[in-house]
Length: 172
Ligand code: MG
Image (cartoon, helix red, strand yellow):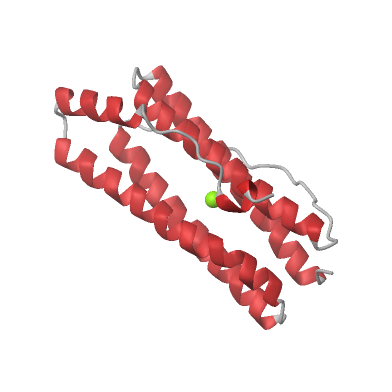
């Protein structure tokens, strides 16, 4: 059984993951409208990943006899002038999510909830990847600058990204 403090923190994380999903969906449509379907695809996959993250937390709350309580999802920005701006905003956001996961981890430890701490290990590693992939794309778009051909070919590269069910969900 989850204690109230851990349960509340997990529910807050569900909301944060769904907000992340909403943010990336907004970015996807920004680039859809801007004629960059590959970048739009990359953010749509990111949207699916964040929904999966929320689902992992919701499944876990239920598994531990808790109650999933869905709250309102705050509005997100709707415009990013360039892909570089969007990937910079992505990195900034993922750094905040990393801090949230670390905070959750600290709560689990202080409440001696070792099952939750163990579940969070997957997210600790996932955040390393999230920050790394955003940084990699910042580097690429910085290198390309305003070169149209470069942006075109990177857009085509990002069109190939596909969704892979995260391990904790695939195992269910
Ligand atoms: Mg996430």
